Image (tube, rainbow, N blue to C red):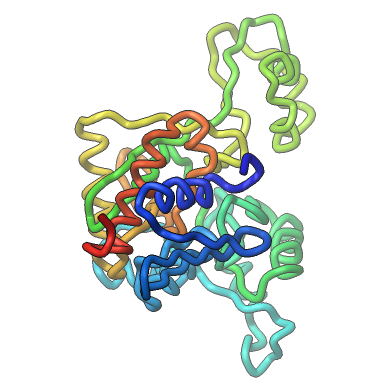
Length: 309
């Protein structure tokens, strides 16, 4: 069905070719796959290959960062804070002071986001107490825990999709940008390029200033595909090799089999940003549908093993 997620469509295609009965439950978040006496499940974007502990670690940004640090894998720190609604005996009484201390330690700003979750929802950059309080309030309104990370100027973000330590897809996330002509303002250039939805992240003075000719202006600090970034395949070379090696090291550290791993380049060095146990490729499928299908096919081959012809 056209309205179904790419993930579910890919499972349907695989099952149709391999004589596997597929039952998609209402809403499409639970999929049962049966061949003979064996039944396998996919839930959300989790295809069922990862162990319970690897899945839980990957879905917990703070835990992932802790494990990677223990393993000596370069990564961005994620400091965990529990929702004060859980009670002082669980959360403690100095959580806000600890948050403010992180803000002081990182004058360039901090990033606040849910400890669990994907797609860049409820992700905020804060450079002041007021911005921090707003971000914390927004995240805690829907989450039991949040993480605070130092804001870093990301030069490039690359996602590596791994299956059993084999890179299936490697792509970078190119943020929307405009190039100045010395005549039009950033607001005018962005609107002309169809990026009106990105204007809310810039202040009025920046938006109304004329962009010098030839100067490139990125419209958002976020690299999320849902925030307008475009996926671009990374070809063989030194950058791809570095990203793949780091992703494999990260996957090995938490013992995960099938995952998408985000790595970022900051000051010329690559670090792990986060690991996702659920492999979502909805945006990527619009540009590379065959590559996405082949990746899910390979993962499903692993799910069914030698029982599938």
